[in-house]
Image (cartoon, rainbow, N blue to C red; front, side):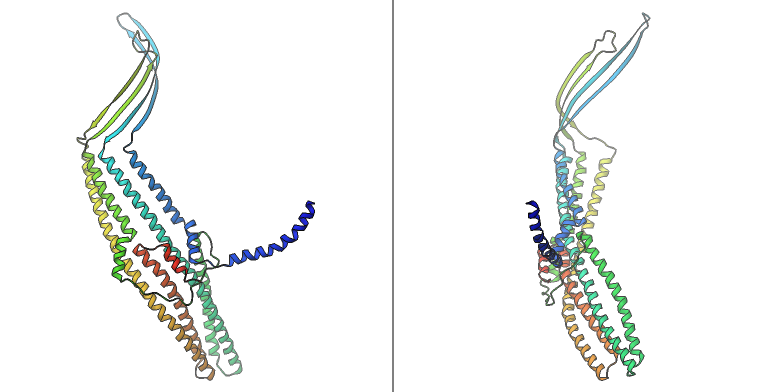
Length: 450
């Protein structure tokens, strides 16, 4: 019965396998979009994983700060063996004794007033805030790195396709020039010119293939997977207007840029460090308690028979620092200088953020203008090529003119594609400089892909 069942199921399985395999191939053939690559990056990017681990580690600083005002309890124990030899001079007698001591105890301390500890708790909160911003900064940087790597692959891929089309056109021109030379209607110069262009295109194709492989491995370094196919940009892409002015973008950056906020936390931390070191001049007050139980099975006394002692105590301990060799004052001066350095670093970060925002704004503005101009340049270059080919057929243009027109057309197409990718990347770059980039921005770009 079982054999008949297997025999009946086997053909059905064999029939279903091609359909399943075709379905898998279809799924694998689907090109990845930008959000697909970004989701892979979120799961596999080592830089983001490192930032996440650092953030989780920083969260423990809060507990360490709280522990400074919690009681500390220690258990201690010790044992030792003693041997004594006593000579009595008046009686000329001597005695030797051996015995062991055993002791254990517990002591506890509860801080009541320690200004340094209170400030360290505040510093812990500042450090955690800084760590949270650093994690958010790593996420924003990942969006930009993913976008840049994605469009680098597309650009390298487009270069290969354009060079392939150019190579085919030059090969056709070379064949025609060679045929005309064989017929005696043209000189060998046209064939040599076409051959030189063809050889140059082969070299460019090798470089483009290498660039494509490098770009794909750059994506792999972020996502952990080598991309097979990526969705391209829709040909009817229309750039948006710039929107807010450069001054508005700079104001946004000064308010939202995470590098500035991180450095602001560093300056705050330096200011708190001054207060913590100044607190070294203040007294401290602790509640202390202890319990000790000690036992000895003998003593050095001639008549010692051993003893057991139990001691418990509880009280307050006040400590007033009087002089520590000038170390506390030196640490205060050092903290003041560190605060000044933090303020200088904050000014530097603000200036750099303004510069990055200006650069990103101007690059986006330029890419929008270039995109419009280069789209028109492609149309004009195609018209020029058509006219040049027609002139070559009627004898008023040379093959060199045709090759130059072809070169100009493919260069215009390449530059137009590069402008598209620059435009989309510069959107993310500007918002990253302003500190407002989000996954929704990648979703918007994702809708421009096909």
